[in-house]
Length: 73
Image 1: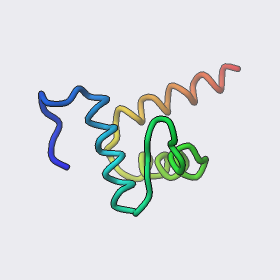
Image 2: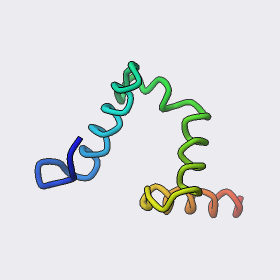
Image 3: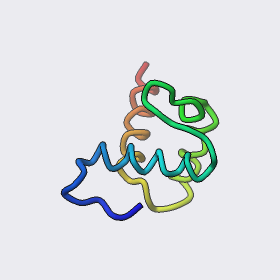
Image 4: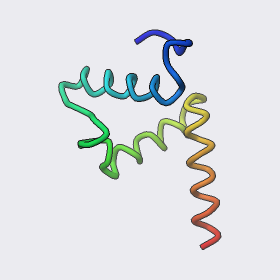
């Protein structure tokens, strides 16, 4: 996959990365047809990964923000 660089903006890099992950699992992802990426278990697995490992920090910040908002409702 390579590293983030000036050839991609941040969102393009992550979209390409996501497509490569699904390709490796012999499945398909697109914005129009996200398939597994829109399922609850996919998000729950990402949250578990965030809590277990010290990476995906920008996603962790977003998840923490969503949790904060949910507690305020």
